[in-house]
Length: 90
Image (cartoon, rainbow, N blue to C red; front, side):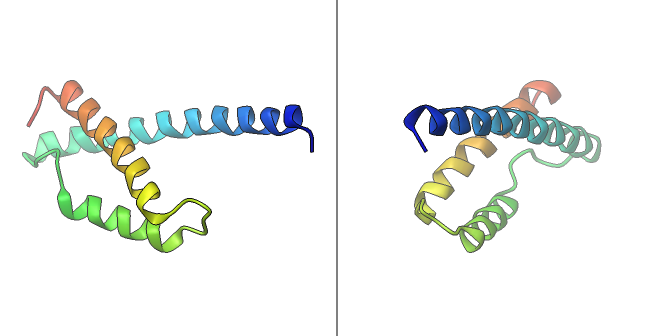
């Protein structure tokens, strides 16, 4: 493959990631509404640990597990921030 062909594939994947990130955020907002109704905290450290552990176990590389955790920390942090904004904090 040429550099241009590889970049086209990267652009396609970036578009897919954007769609997935926004879908994930929408689902997190739904969870935020349920948490608000039930009086539950936005932050759930046990759930986050489960996500990190699951992603590390499923990681085929070449990204190191620590990189995967950092990426998911950002995704989860942004979802949590959005939940707090939309549900006016819990």
